[in-house]
Length: 251
Image 1 (tube, one colour):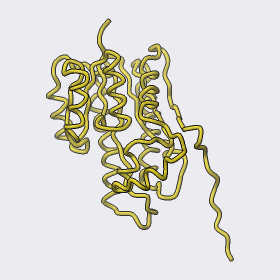
Image 2 (spheres, rainbow, N blue to C red):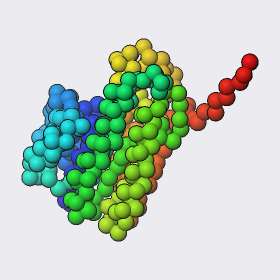
Image 3 (cartoon, helix red, strand yellow):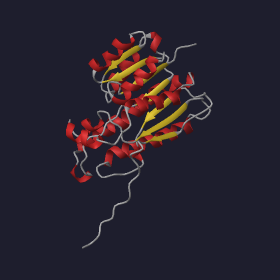
Image 4 (cartoon, one colour):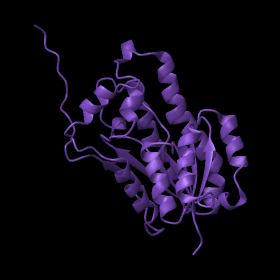
């Protein structure tokens, strides 16, 4: 059986690290991309350089991205699955109190970098009748206070996935959008600038989604028969559900 190859972004922690480990542990070659080289090296230590190739760079840097793709070893060049996982939320402030630089960083990471990598890999994904899994969020569907630009970027990812499916009609390339709800990873630590108390409070007693849960979901999608496509899959912990609408009343 031919060994397949996965490229996953944001592979140094959370969903991305779990996805990389899930696929490497089940016989795939994995190209693990992220900024933190020391975290990526742990995947090589665990699975070996013949199974995992790492590329440490900032996904927002297009020149570095192109260089990483150009430098892929020969046995990692045939990419069958792209998992666009890299992304982040910054701040829980309301829009009127937000830092514009943080908004731009979220857009550059969650939107611009994602579409750039996708476009660069589309020719070979079409040639290999491969697949794309985009990691979006329920924040792209359900608004909440402080969600502002983060939610907007994830709504983009969801719609972009649907439009990709339309454009790729007839090519055999599958496109899926995974939309997790509350998940306990480094997400809240990044969002709050490293506030462990805030992160612990958010997840306490909630039995949130784990990184392994999402890795298992992506694995299931990737291994469906080639005539099946999961367009969108929304995943929440049982403890979470959609909230009501807000109403302000005059005194």
